[in-house]
Every structure is written in C-alpha cells, then in structure tokens.
Length: 250
Ligand SMILES: Nc1nc2c(ncn2[C@@H]2O[C@H](COP(=O)(O)OP(=O)(O)OP(=O)(O)O)[C@@H](O)[C@H]2O)c(=O)[nH]1
Ligand SMILES: [Mg+2]
Image (tube, rainbow, N blue to C red; front, side, top):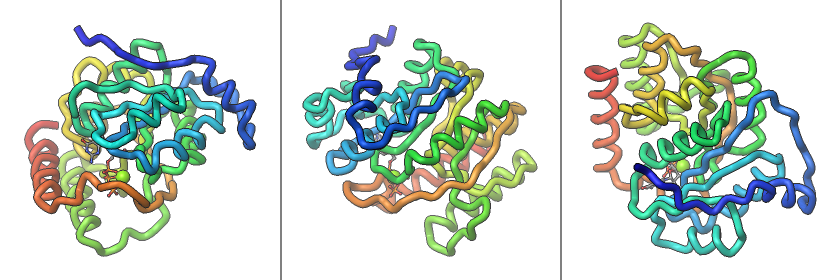
C-alpha cells in the first residue's frame, strides 16, 4: 500500500498569510487543494508557492525526485511538500496528488505547474466553476484568444481534431496543465487513472459525460529550468502516445 512521507503543516498557509503583503482570503464552499508538481524547479518554486500562500489556499508541492536544489528549498523554507523516492513523470505526480486530495477529503483539486507558468490569480476562477457544478475545469489560453501557428500549436490542433472526432466536442487547449477537478473526478482519478496526459484525460471525461468546461486564463512562458519537451523525441513520443490513447483507449 502507498505510504505518504510528507511534510505538511496545516497552519502554514494561515501563518504565511498574516506575514505576507497580500491578504486575500476567500470563503469557498469547496475545500480546495492546489497540487504543484515540481521537477528541477529550484529557480521557480519559491516565488510560485509564496504567491499561492498569499491567497490562503491549501497547497502541496510534489517533488518528483528532483536532482537540483528543489527539495532542499522546500525543506529549508518549511513548505508543504512530498518527496517522491523515484521520478514518476507528470502523470504519475498528479495522480499522487489526487490520491492525497481524496484521502484528505478535498472537494476540489487544482493542478498548477511548478515552473510558474500558471498564474495563481486564475485559481479563483477555476474554483468558481467547480462551485457552479462543473466536474472538470481547464484553464485555456484560447477560449477568446487566437491560437498561434507554431509547431507546438500544430500538435494542439491535431489533438483538438482527434477529441472532436472521438467525442463531438470542440475544445481549445487540450494540453493545458492548469486544471480543476471536482470531488467525483478526484475519486475517479485517485483510484484508477488510465490516462497518459491532459488531452486523453479530457477526452475520457467528456466521453463519460462529466461536466467539462474551459475558461480563459493567461499563461506565462517558462522563465527558468528545462521543459519536459526540450527534447524533440520526447515531444514525438508524447504526441503519439496521447493520440493512440484518444483513438483506441478513451
Ligand atoms: N520535465 C519534467 N517535468 C516534470 C516531471 N515531473 C514533474 N514535472 C513537472 O511537471 C510540470 C510540467 O512540466 P513542463 O516541463 O513545465 O511542461 P510544459 O508546461 O508542458 O512545457 P513548457 O511550456 O515548456 O514549460 C512542471 O511543473 C514540472 O516541474 C518530470 O519528470 N520531468
Ligand atoms: Mg511548463
């Protein structure tokens, strides 16, 4: 059975909130956990977590066996985190987060990348849509904004087309990692998650008639650290795996 080896101080966010310059505290109906996967994010993680703390959210950084100083920074600054003993990759890390959210009875889990690309100011909008009765809410860059013609966005267009063919639903940003899961989806994913990444997850949920919604957010470019897709072979592997999963599995 999976055992957590976790550093989590429940009062931490409250304490930080008092000392931080911003003091926004929302009274949400849903109990929310922000899950932050982090692999070699030593240059990004501190400012991101401080920003999340300033809003008063519960959060958990999942350190995916980083080889840089990410783990040390999390320990030194006494931040809520879980150190994985092996590198699981993005899908595995988020699944650990969903299991944690389920075991601790959260109603809503929000995924935010550890590289700071997903500005925490939009978490508020994602939670609002879960409160409105949606099961899965994606922070999309392209609900009202135009998608550029880059190689990456060509991949995104192909995935949109596959999801459209499979489910009949038009989606705008299938690769977005900024997502909110309601309780039913948290439980589903914590128990059995047979999905490789965000696009086939989205396809699966639409197929299963979950209420899926995209809302407009802004995302930043990664400022430091190395992207998962820095290696073109990894990008090709990702595209093929996700496409096959959408076509044959979901
Ligand atoms: N590269 C990488 N990232 C991981 C891994 N495990 C967890 N992550 C985290 O997963 C998140 C997404 O990875 P990114 O490399 O930012 O992927 P991306 O956002 O699609 O790509 P960029 O737009 O180039 O940043 C980040 O928070 C990483 O720290 C891993 O094994 N490798
Ligand atoms: Mg990123």
